[in-house]
Length: 342
Image (tube, rainbow, N blue to C red; front, side, top):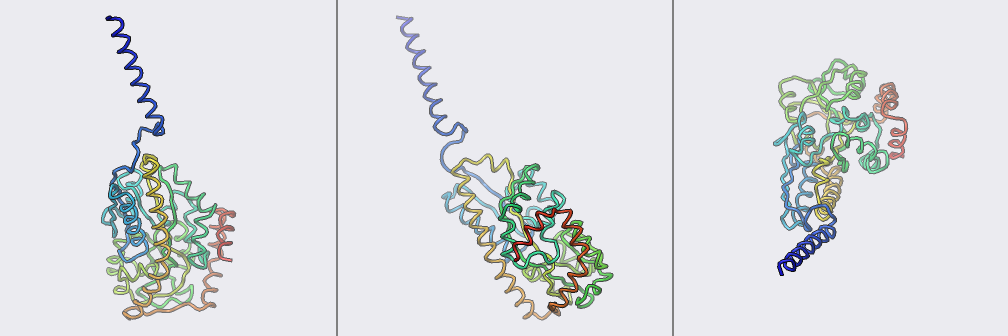
């Protein structure tokens, strides 16, 4: 009887283990339970609330929280409330924040392909820039961040940049001679302003208003929405509508965070990214149009819009910079980018 009892107990144990193994196999063997994971996700960026970046981030929050029935909480931190220009990428790598949306000029040290928005007069409009980053060459550049443990998800446009300054109206390349201009940073922008006889320096966006107010720099380049939302016209006398370079953002996440999501959770977040990208792209042009109107209505800055002949003069002056950096970035990449504006 004792032997029979032991045999029955052994059989029951083996059957129980087999059943558990079968259950693990049915769930994909990942160890993750079925259903949406309970998470708190942080999204950090450095610009103001009335911007395409914030509109996209809020759309992402709304979609993910709704579709997850509140299991996923999304916290949005604008205006450098959580991390600033200098430390947001490192904190993404450390998974202290799950999504950041940096200006691509901040990523040029990671890969020269992120100089694309700074190439003078490369894209004719937002649609051309969107098409490049959604295409093969743009996605190829995003993939190069994976060596850092970072995943590039999509590009959010802010638009063409224009120059404000405190000294004089800029109408010709020579007008910039001797000025000190704040840029987002990177060797291409340094070369561009160096060719125009101007000095350039990188100052965190959250500190730029004070730097302009105190005369640390004479001017800066930015989109209409960034100029208006941060009220740079309060501390600048002149604005030139140029469209010479762009502000484009990269929506980035941490690969460990992303790989730790089960299928159901990842699908919700992926769809949230798609919705957010659409909102950010749709709002960029509208916000820039509204911002320019607001700047004109406020009347605190003298506005000069470059004529076609004036733009041609800048293009011709910057040809050496364009040729040099087209080679550094890659002829195939530049050719693909140029094709989007035809």
